[in-house]
Image (cartoon, rainbow, N blue to C red):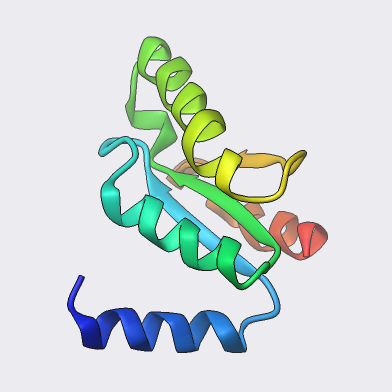
Length: 102
């Protein structure tokens, strides 16, 4: 991440009431995901973790990514938050469910 990107990202998080952290199931957890979750924790913002492309991975990969989220990103953020999984087939329900979460 460049310094300019870090600064603009932090400013965006400072203005946010709620953060939505969108992760790609195909890429697992990246260093950038961890870095961004650190910003969210530092500013103590509520966070919804949204896993994209969850329908494109195997059941073994799903178990591994859930384990990784719980032990890396989720541990950085507030405890007890629910992780939501959506795919393109169910995207019409995303807005309603996000609204209910917020």
